[in-house]
Image (tube, rainbow, N blue to C red; front, side, top):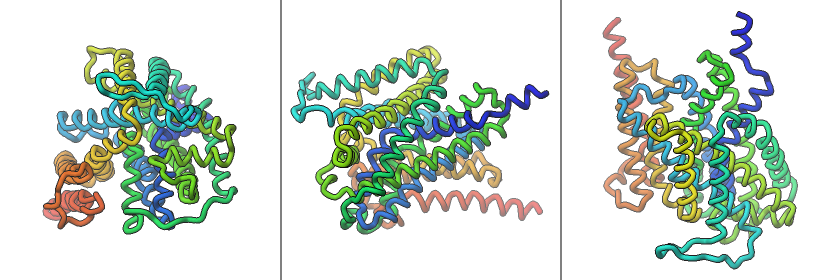
Length: 446
């Protein structure tokens, strides 16, 4: 009996390691590049925009991890098998080979490598497509290394959690302290949507980190790691997952607030920047010279690499279960090649292509988390899950089409349509309707 008790517990060091690893999984590319630009554009409306951003970039991923734990990792089990598989495949493609994973390589290049190059960039054309030679070589080696690390996933927790992350955290703390201590430029006027509705703009900007989608996957990955560590009891797993999620959320909030503030006080350093990576690079070069730049490039490369490895291994495990004909290692190789190929699109282009997709899928993910917490309250959980997610998907598609520049003015009468959150009210109404349907039945039964 004594042996069993011991098995369902983890040392404090291991729990911290798990929390740090969760933080490192999340702290990838988007987390470093979106806050500085958002802070710069929000200017004097910094506080509201930052609050909105923290809601979707910290709050939602945290709640999602807890929902995954609550559902014992089977968060989509109440959906029809085809729908559950389709949603899972969509999420894995978005956070894997289509957007999030290639973006890690691009950000590592933009922030970690490009500043050291001479401004003249050699390009060459293949089949009419112009390619940047430095970017091509960098992304090939980046995803080559990610592939090697993902081929041996057992060592992941120890390598990432215990070695890389503490270095990363120390360097980020240094950056955060400098933002507070060193004088920056005064806050400027807000730009664009940040003038009129900074809060919703911040909320939507938080989508870009893709962390809520990643939570659906990382939650399952963490439960898997806990099983391998001998934590087999669902209640114990949930406990450790929540601890890990809280550690990660605290870390993320700290980093975001510092980077938002950095962007807001960057002044001339941010002029003409097309992404937050440029602002971050300019700031560090300005304040700390070459030494600072070397440190920053190290931090960013490590952050992006850990995220890429986590995403590639999670996607490979998933697709391998779906299509066992190709082995886990086969998928790792295949996905790494796809990532390296897509990473040569360029960062600004990749972000603009991903936004409509995120506007469509995010509402579904958020609705899934909401109904997971309410499962016991529904008279017919299966029906409720299906109705609510269908509503979220329908209106999410409208928001996605709008973001893609399609004319959907027919729906202009809807609340929050202009802000790109038309899905919110209908989805909430669907949830309330499903809950009320339950109460009517229980009143009738009594």
